[in-house]
Amino acid sequence: MRGHFFRGLDPLTYEAILYDVADRVATITLNKPERLNAFDDHMLTEWADAIGRADQDRGVGAVIITGAGRGFCSGMNVAAEAGGSGVLRTQASVADRRHSLRDRVHPIPRALIQLEKPYIAAINGAAAGAGMDMATMADIRFMSTTARVGMTYVRMGLIPGDGGTYSLPRVVGTQRALDMIWTGKMITAQEALEIGYALAVYEPEELMPRVTEYAKKIANGPGVAVQLSKKLVYRSANIPFDEHLDMAQMAMFIAQSTEDAREGPRAFVEKREPQFKGS
Image (cartoon, rainbow, N blue to C red; front, side):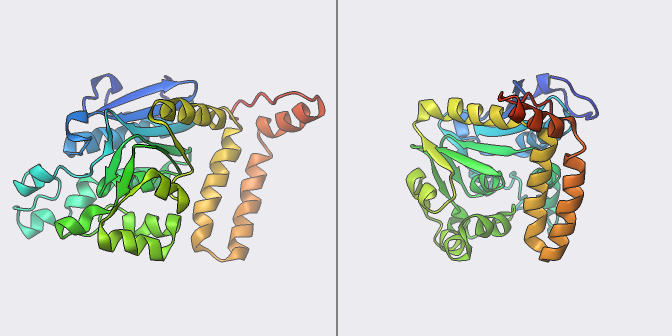
């Protein structure tokens, strides 16, 4: 792994997650399988650090997020929250609780806002509450046939506080998003596929090989074009069409100035696969 600018935690000292880079793909694995990868401050800090590390590493072209064991992420540690020692700090003063999410959980979605590289979720098991929020923040989601997802906040008398009310309607539409939020129901991988939440569903043993294969293909493509197109898709959702066209012109100017933009046409003329370098 080649880190160029990012100075964070030493990845060798990560304890709550695993971080691996191979073939230009960074894989972040939530590593608390004994509690279905429910997160605490420790995991959240390492998770945000790993996203920043992948973002700044020029040797990384795509990022996979998944979970160890039989769960993807069960969200907050409910037992810890009930005892007052969880992320929400439920027994602390109002002043201390006021920014509990901002300071502890929101560094992850904020890091993802800055991440222009593809961020792909391999949902291997249950993703509940904040765990589903975290999966929904991915650009693309693949699921195991045994996985289920649900916005279970309502069962705790809570609301989605990690970005779910923003991102879920943009993935499945307002009506389905509100249905999931209001009922707190869990849905199967097949149901997630049918409503467009998951791009594809695989048998458990096929999930990571298939997702890794997909990520490698994108990671070894024309990196500047891939990242600029992602940025255009997200930024264009909230601006007028003429502003989108202006942004597209600027992005195209940058993309066509890269070596990859010269390699693509050459490979087409020479009837061979292009050898993109991400530059």
